[in-house]
Image 1 (cartoon, rainbow, N blue to C red):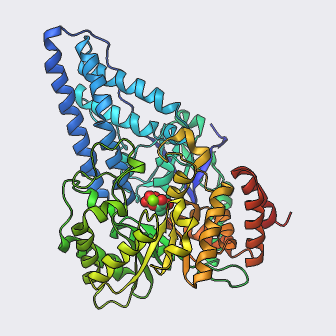
Image 2 (cartoon, rainbow, N blue to C red):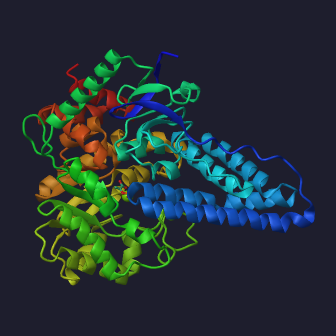
Image 3 (cartoon, rainbow, N blue to C red):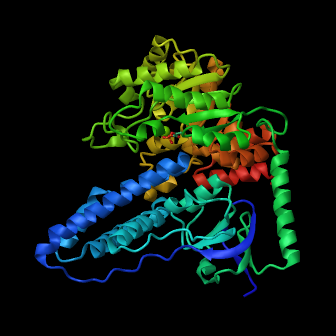
Length: 556
Ligand code: PEP
Ligand code: MG
């Protein structure tokens, strides 16, 4: 077959090589009935398989580190979901074998997830992978996975599971092509994190015969089957030109007329530092320290361990800025030793700074470890608290920092609308603000960020959210202080221009987004960004705001 196919390009670059398909999915286990007296034994088999798979996923996460670790740990939690497990038990009680009960329980959960909006639909592949692993273990067959090969290849799959992509040998995998998945699927996120060209949502992917040569263009989404020499050269040249134009916009973040907006990286720990440095991050704008605490949710890591990890990060940016967020536990990141187990509404419960003020010894240890880690380093250390609601919260945090003698700037994240509405008052206590637009959207629209069906309200282009950004930046200007953005909003190149126009003083994002934001910002003047921001705020919906900003910035 010589043809051109088109999917959705999600990770830039060109890969040319032979096709290898992902190990086949686990077969559907037969629907055989078991005798009633065998039920307890089957339930135990199911439980053991679940525990083993969860442990394996966690171990892979530990090996992989960084973003991949968080994804794999989330999968381990999926495997142990209490509702799923009681459904498995129930099915076994009424006569299913362990493998069939797992298969069927996951199928009904999958249907729920697939219909629960874009975000959850994107997690279906993760769920399928967990099911396949448990069923394979119960059936005693090999785990599905990446094919063995000594030669580099283009990996084809229905969808890629984090457990596989996390440990991929990137010297062998030239690129990914998947039949399913979207731009927010884990295949896409991890491909970008690994810097491997990738195309998703290509319906004909499964029909590509093993060992066929394909050229994959991760920017346009085009796949050329059996490309000739001229096609190979043209594709490679186009990819190099694109890379060169991104590289040409290297250096500090700034608008075309030289208004500086430092571009910083969001990291989860030392493992993410390499990618941040490579992308030209001018520092770290959000170090999510909770990843260090999630290793063992039954106790805090020791002060020594914390110092060691913080120092690694601080050393990577000897003269840059590093903004460390103190532990943000609770809600979607519960910790057994800190988070109340019985909250009716965890997102509105004791989380973030509230948790730390209830457990001052945990905050004190973390701040002391940071002070020790920064000792003798020329780094500009900034420390901020998540979930600051008002001036009293900001003061309590600043007092805690002062008590341990921390030499750093103290800041408050603006994630709760009250903090944006009274930003000037919060700024009486701290030196900077950092807008956590993910939570700010959640609390502004009363829309749980974990519920995919509410994705429309979570859109950071919502004019009401832009209004709160503007309130915060105006307060910062009035107080002569800074106000950055560290939520996902900063990673959208167009929105980054709008945020700049609204007056934010830095943008912090996943490292992979930095070159794109830098290049887009460099194409527009500050005045254009301000006009785009005004147009977006005048709109009535997120999509109108985006279109209005786009129209201004493209000079329409
Ligand atoms: C945010 O809420 O925007 C943020 C940056 O914090 P997190 O996503 O870790 O809650
Ligand atoms: Mg947050």
